[in-house]
Amino acid sequence: MTSTDTTPATQAAAEPGTGRRFGADFVWGSATAAYQVEGAVTEGGRGPSIWDTFSHTPGRTLNGETGDVAIDHYHRVSEDVALMASLGLAAYRFSISWPRVQPGGTGPANPEGLAFYSRLVDELLAAGIQPVVTLYHWDLPAELEEAGGWTNRATAYAFAEYARIVATELGDRVSLWTTLNEPWCAAFLGYAAGVHAPGRTEPVAALRAAHHLNLAHGLAARAIRDELGEQTPISITLNLHVTRPVDAASAADLDAVRQLDAVGNRIWLDPLFKGTYPADLLADTAHLTDWSFVQPGDGELIKVPLDSLGVNYYATSRARRHAGAGEPERADGHGDGASPWVGADTVEFLEMPGPHTAMGWNIDPDGLVELLLRLHREYPATPLMITENGAAFDDEVGPDGAVHDDDRVAYLHGHIDAVARAIDAGADVRGYFVWSLFDNFEWAFGYERRFGIVRVDYDTQVRTPKDSARWYADLIATGTL
Image (cartoon, rainbow, N blue to C red; front, side):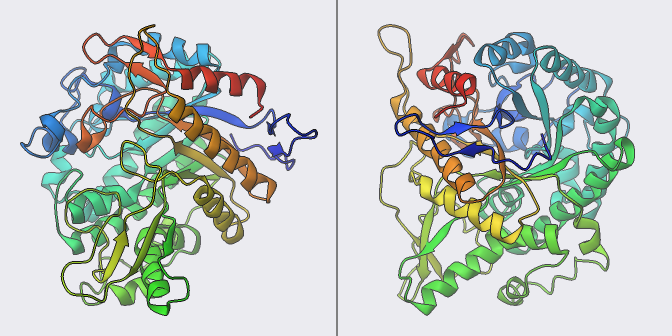
């Protein structure tokens, strides 16, 4: 996953019309998350997570839907791995359910939970597919939330012990260890906006959660390497925001974007790579907190060498400084809860022009190029991986029983071409994971929004590859876009 070969992973076509060709070492994969696919929430010794609690609370999810069954991946591992192999996936990025491994978040491991993931890893390896593990994709054990969740510093240390348990069990069979998936969502959608579990609307709690997630990353990375050796490949996956000013000549609008960049992007990037928080973020939020929850030495604990940085990308936004009366417009794509943009109360987001996906997110592959080149400029020594990219559309099964999802094929083509353009411009991008392999439980949106390249009939659990899956399989086989 972290080849030292310095040759470009892709190059422009040698002849007009032949398409872009990716190198043989470029990693093609797909991704899922435990609560979205596994089901079996009360089986195998699994304890409840904050998403069990949240989704079972009336009014929290669309139609009151939950991940209780999801797509029943827990019982269909062999079938699902065989499907991955049929598509030619080189890697599968999946998350481990913390409450399946440690039902209460602390204490001894659950042998049945560990055995489930060990079997999944073995089946992937037998199929020639690299296992890429994400240790946290938002399903905090409910018992830990009762003790404060991510606002409690002890949760970071509990996470490190959980990481150690999993590392000991799975060992060097894992190709890449990702500590956290989209900690911005966990902290700010979960603790400030209230639209994700645990559903709290406390701005300072979100900042505390953000720091403790950063600390958890550093502690877990160190625990994994303590168990498996200093050369063990470590990553973290961030959903970094590409926000442009409404008026690029306006100092006020440029400052609004700067403020969003601090609380959306640099709140993660600066601790990860510099061991400090941005001075402007501390100033922007000084009226809320003195940040005394950051203890001496935390920066060094957080800052550990990364073998790659995972990048999740879906859309762009545009913002300006709100100067009028009334509430600022907030067309930021994150639902109708309280603002997740802590400290940025006078920033407003304007509606983005189309085209849009079924999520209402705009389609802008150029934003991915912009993001990748920024990361390459600022952190040139760190390889990049596209760990999520994809789109929900209103898929329909045709008379022939197939799903002809031309919109999704066009979306994927445009964004993979964007990856190639970024590589041609110098970015070191090592792989691409489409989101998602399967239709699944889309968090607060329930089962209505379908991101999969494989359709799942939620009544029968039958899997049917869509046209996008066949298109992606061809891309993997040929390496040519």
